[in-house]
Length: 193
Image 1: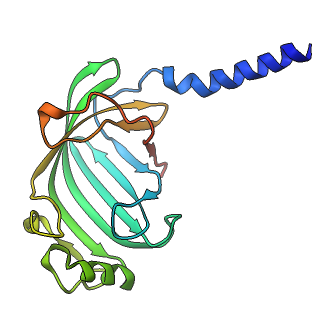
Image 2 (image 1 turned 120 degrees about the horizontal axis):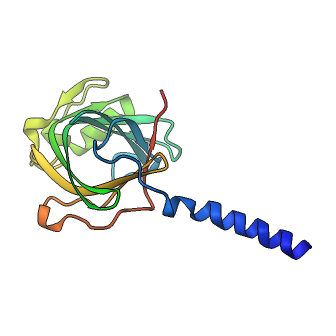
């Protein structure tokens, strides 16, 4: 009896664990709609950690990367806002679609004195002075050292939505090198407001 109960519990646990992998994709015909957020993760630069917010309405999308001075994403220092146009493409397999993201504008804000110090130390986008709390448009400065890529810039990826999780594939600046695989280890979650 104990063995049967143990097997049943293990079976239920495995079924619950694997359920998202076989879950039917949610509607993917509209791209990023509403407010989604990535997990707090180690940043590539400007602080220890970062998360990204994506807020989409129709084809318009705002992506905000917030950089933090602590490992738990509680002390923001810098914010980068991107104005993006999203174009949803064809379905490449059940529930997975192509997605083109055209980054048209970028603006950087040092949120406090620590953020100001970081951006000034970098000379970000050629500016030596970064007043705290000033949102500075860097769209026309793209392509110079220590700045964003030259805008507009298009990145090509794929995506799906499973169980209220938004998964991207890899990103490429070349449509002939668009990723065919989803990154199931990283996802956005829907923000309830």
